[in-house]
Length: 361
Image 1 (cartoon, rainbow, N blue to C red):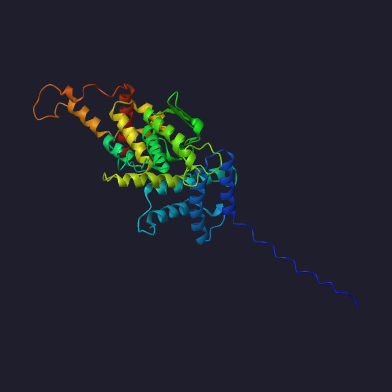
Image 2: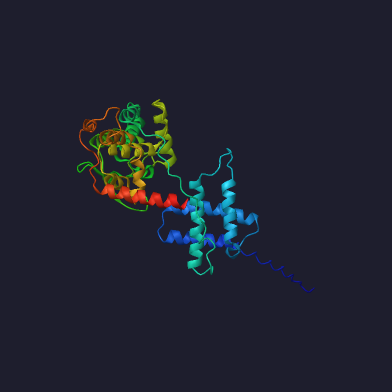
């Protein structure tokens, strides 16, 4: 009997991958291979995933199908979109999401995947310039610092964390990544490795914060370690480096317990450091270096928070500031605290920019 060999049915070729999804994946890979920060890659992946889903729902699967009117339609969709709590997306959120799309299509054009960049003329929403909602006074900061239970290892650790944030104004991710060898007690400095923008910087740290870090390292940290040797300074309950959200929750809880009518997490101490240093006469450029701001304009938000200093200078220098005319109240500021002569030209330049923006509105 002749054996019959049945030929298997050839498999149907798989459908081609979504070209827009493939382009986004290549773009993200390019960012990673060109040493963009992990946060940048993750954020843009999330923003572009939302855009890709919006496109798919409308049958748009190829970058060539995306035109300027379609991008403007997506911009209007974001403006009218409402989150689960009924709140609209902030203009800052809309701005950064559109910026990710502009960057994607700029890259696609440079790589010759597209002949024309449809996003080149998209106008981004104007960013809102908001002051920090809360800033601690010196007394309020001390009230928060005194809350941890020093009878427990976690309490000593938390006091050291709060003191470090207050003393240095470092970002929470910088605190989470801090290593034992980054703290130089002899020189009174802390080395921030690969901060925002992957930039290193060396900043001062106060004697009190150093004392609490030393107490924590000597007495509490050995009890929090879980066997594995790690050079990370601050360890969570698992003996590991803190996640950013864990640090935020920890600090936010202490601020709430202080019952001072203010709220905030790690960034609250960053705001507080900048404001208190300004009010005590620090040059804004020194604070810029301390905070790791790439541009002075980023730091200048804190100059607008120093209302006490502003009022003192106003009272001492404006002839109409008092009910009775007379000599200027120089005693209101025993020693002028604005020492940077160059700040005057910076102010005039900023006013000129504001005038041009007002004219364009």
